[in-house]
Length: 174
Image (cartoon, rainbow, N blue to C red; front, side):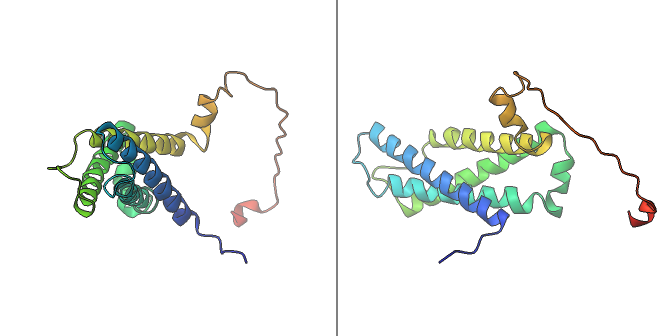
């Protein structure tokens, strides 16, 4: 039995949600271990999984569906630092919402609010995600990855063929 292939946007949002949920669940377990609380408690990994899934799905939806559409046009036309700063501030609001939702659904014993250490961790991860996506969108697919892996530091000789064709009446077809 084969499953139908999901549209590209939905697939990207689901992957971001899954990765965000797993990273947040692992972070929550480390956080629980630091405070000496029992592992796999209901306020540890399940809470982290929920928080990560909520944050990543909302930010993924905004990044993949809302911003490329007409509502994101003013932000796309802005300067790159402004673009990244605004998206990071939006991410901060989403992070605070996700952390508060996780605190409300899975309350931890003796907790009196959002732990301040969780916000910078989430904000740094979101900033890296936003920065890499925007640089990828600005420079082209995988240019940043190729630069980071050193592909441009050791150039390779490539053979390229350039073909110029002048078709009759091509101006009318264009």
